[in-house]
Image (cartoon, rainbow, N blue to C red; front, side):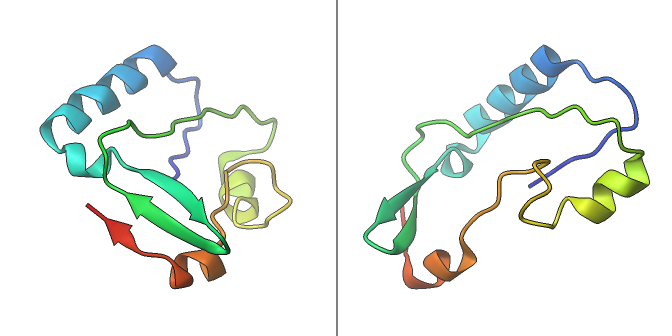
Length: 89
């Protein structure tokens, strides 16, 4: 999941907010795990990954570019691996 903002954000506040939300729905605090060529979602309450990126692009440019694998704006998931994987809760 990716969010885009046209201004600086309070990274600590967003991180704290996500931690608080995950306390209420720990099922979403799982992790992706590689199993051979497959990618599993393990609902283990290990915490969620969160990262922040800054860019000189306009908001419109960033949103149009983010889906490209070489954009460097978001961490892409190997969708072929997810089709072979499982969800383990």
